[in-house]
Image (cartoon, rainbow, N blue to C red; front, side, top):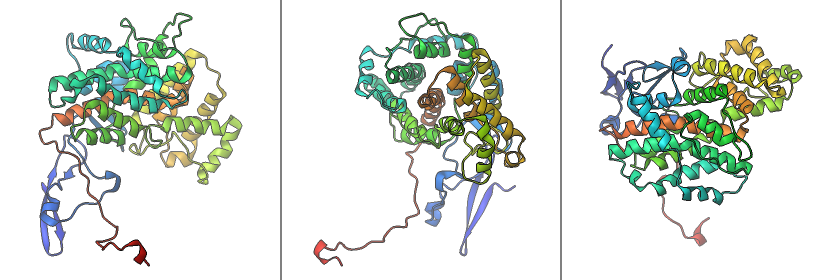
Length: 426
């Protein structure tokens, strides 16, 4: 194969370099296209455009593959811990020797919030969506850590990454507690990352809270499965915000705002709302027929990237069943979910279209069983994805070719015209 592509416009031909990654599709380098041709490429939503070079996450949607720094997501979810995955995403390699213990200690020591910061939550209405609280609270961290503004200092970038990973569970738990009118629970240094988060969410002053190890491990797996997912909408938002030199807290707040959109982070909430709409097992045949007749959408099935199956879904399915068995949950909605899963996995209509249950289908069921309301689902997504966002942000700043993002457009508006006074306009 040639190492260049030839673009012919009229009677002129232009050579465009072809770049090769370690795996995945080759890309045509169009960086000099405008300078040579005075033309742009047109790619709405950038679905055929590589916006950056990255060594963090690789996805092969046709084969159902998701790799973090080369490691399959299935292996990481089964054998690793969330903080080890955070270390891997940030540093490029799995920790050796005492590195993991040191990293865990560093994160644990950063979990507390400034005492004055707790008063920040009181500025929100009690019925505010937790994602609104998260967006504001994370952005406000920059007011407490002025050193984070020094984005060109690698030491400060590292400290900011640790702060964000450490404080996100505390902020998320406070957003939850604030929404239900309960007092905040401070983190404990003798608990793991996921144990701490569950305790901060569900402990109350009236009685001791003992973390269920099955639920803690399930929470850890959910975090791992959502840690990073290549250049999706929110990650691209974080990178675009960071390209201007914005501080990491502002960039992560921008990512959270993007994730809040129902087409992105709200998918597991939509899947659960679909189950509520179905209501009971008896209504499934009619609903499935409505999907086939295109009256309804089947939420939690299929994926924009994965055309075969979502590799995270298999892990999430197993975790879901473990949680349901541990809790002995008898929720009618969960019965609807399990029956709908059986139908989708056996009906040729769904099989032919590869509409397999995705991670959002199982994570919504699992989180509901664990006691989280639907408005907290995207918050948990943001908590986990922070590790990927800050790793991508850090990688971008380490790229010597970094430039401020500046997409172009196909302009379809009016051409230049002269102003007409209001009394003379026909």
